[in-house]
Length: 373
Picture 1 (cartoon, rainbow, N blue to C red):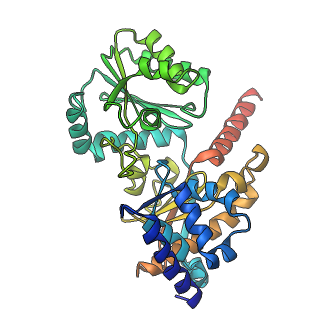
Picture 2 (spheres, helix red, strand yellow):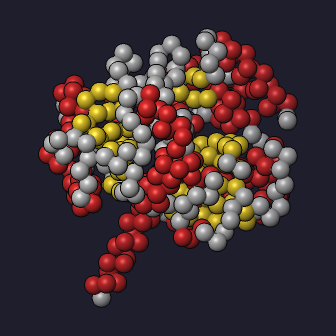
Picture 3 (cartoon, rainbow, N blue to C red):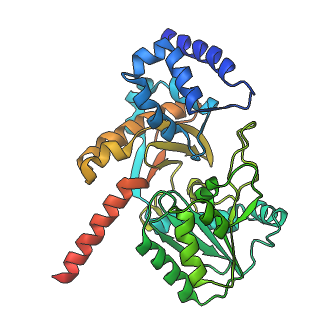
């Protein structure tokens, strides 16, 4: 490690000990700004306008979107010396794919009902919701920009609407896809980002209608109106995802349905990656990418694909090789840090986010044009 990096490391440790008062290993946005503002060496080498960049950094390193950054992950990001690995990156085998919304939904379902079935079953039982495999329950994972629907019999649907992206058309498509199955659900449970609308002093479950009353013109109101009309007899509730302000942890244990759980184990990979058998998997979202080896995350790097690849609402494919080259260099550096071999390692870069939407939408338009001809 260079003397400059050692200086940064020592300064960071001193500042972080003061910032993380409760010693839980997490810092929030204000604390992150304080750290970066105090570390003069880091500020000079990395930032031109600190305040304008903290939001982007937080979005990149806040891998579960809860508003907090893992301190160790932050340190790893700061201290990773990618330049040392540049000469060896050519020995890595790289494959890049855009994961479709259907790919993500399939992987989420595998994580929910298979990989983490035991833990999820216990969470539901403790919440008084019954067994995970109850055929009369519909699960809606409402994220910020997309929503996935699952049931115990195999239903898997994904539509582009959520807490931040409003689309009545997508909501109607969701309900139509669910009702076509013909199941009579007694219980509808909304999980994921919509649970952030609840407060720490709320119970583990809150009626969606009550949340809609509290939050007019929100996703809660939109989902409530659509679901009450389609499933009037079902009990429809939201699972609390609020954080305890003292511990900075979820007040209640959360269901495990992150698609990256399946991705990192090679479960449910898209057809284009089935014959690749990767050793390393890179989960690249909007503002950052996570690097996994043997199912374990070994690093997170900030790279804003939305800004770099999607400028002007267009996917700039000509910029993709440069981005992949940078990822390749980071992966090689992480492997060296882990004392793992670099030569001939297969790296799958699975991309989601806005770049994925632009890429797949353009493919669909081309397909339609071909059909018209």
